[in-house]
Length: 217
Image (cartoon, rainbow, N blue to C red):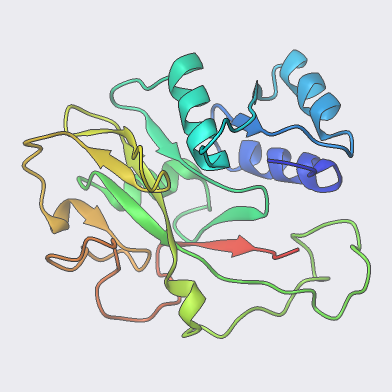
């Protein structure tokens, strides 16, 4: 995160309500009060706040990944997802909670979640909430950017965490023995054989299991 103060509380509250047990926020220095708000949320036990600042030749994603691994790390059998501050996980299974998504994934190791882009809906000023009738217009289902994905996976001896390069993908251990059928696309189907981009199998881009709301700013 960086300069997300106006949007932060809704983002944290939403993901706690749908069932994430821990939220870790890596944030570069901000100028809008985000740092102070993150520190207060950390002190209240609502999140874990990791201040980060990219070094020379280091991207913000690399800095965040390094801070997470050094400070928090991974536990076998736990589920992990990587979200930006303008992305909300939209679960279409069961009652819309993280546990329902895990049940829907079944024996697979994880799922690659498709984006769905929401624009300004004609607003010149932010009306106060993202998840509201103020933002009812989104990209068409077959818009090319909706093919972008984010991971949600369970760590194990085979799936070890987020990748060191291309951090928004799962890292697979050498000799992992997994196949494309061990990960699902956002439509709930196994991935295509040989597709290293983790693209979902042919079918509607509008997800059957889960999706993303993302609001470009």
